[in-house]
Image 1 (cartoon, one colour):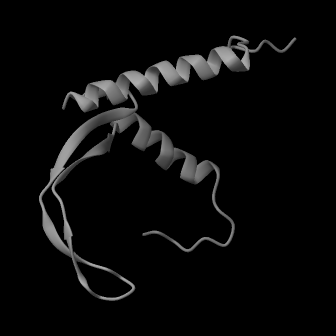
Image 2 (tube, one colour):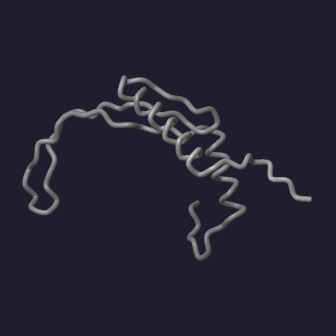
Image 3 (tube, helix red, strand yellow):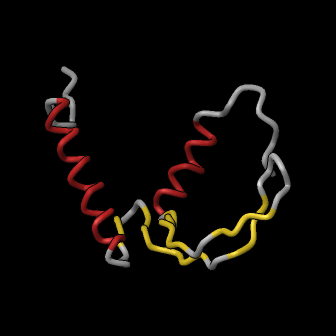
Length: 98
């Protein structure tokens, strides 16, 4: 007998839960806060200064305003799982990454 260890949830209940989590993260970041999800990573805000950019099509200088951007730092557990998965599920014809 095979037992599914994951609870069976309706798709709309899963969508609601995910939306609540993402909305909560977004609200905390909007307040310039930091959110840590144990074993996954942390979300924070980085401040980007105003700078002079270039339009890639024309090469004309463009003023880029200062802004706040979300930043994600991977947790150790997630990084380890990804690296272990690299060995379990290699990509066909992939070049060695070192």
